[in-house]
Image (tube, rainbow, N blue to C red; front, side, top):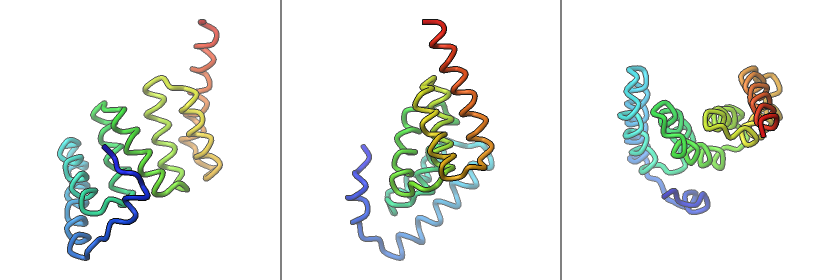
Amino acid sequence: MVQKITELEKVPIQQSEVDEANHFFEKAFNFEKEKKYAEAVACYDKVIKLVPIHHLAWYNKAGDLARLDKYEEAITCYNVAIKLYPTNGSFWTNKGLVLLLQREYAEAVACFDVSLRLDPLNKTAKKYRTSAKEKQGEIICLT
């Protein structure tokens, strides 16, 4: 279970923990290059255990979970990353992409809308927002 963000922000972090977290972050990144996503997730878990407010570890873990078709877990991790860094449009875009894969079109559109408010030039968010809106329309027509 993911701790509340207010609890995460109060966790004292030692320099040795930061150094160890950086080691596992780099290791996870290398696993990603090799498309070893489960191994990368395990490394990100170690980063998060050491530095619970590491927004990039949460974000990257979410992406790897999505690549492993673990969409619910990915959404949970994107939510934590977004709470830690709510103004990062990429976090919102990628959460929207996972929601789109889950056929949660209205929620996906909402994420893409936030992403586009943060970065109006985000071509990926524009493209997939259009797709989600079209899919949303198909469902309305079918029911």
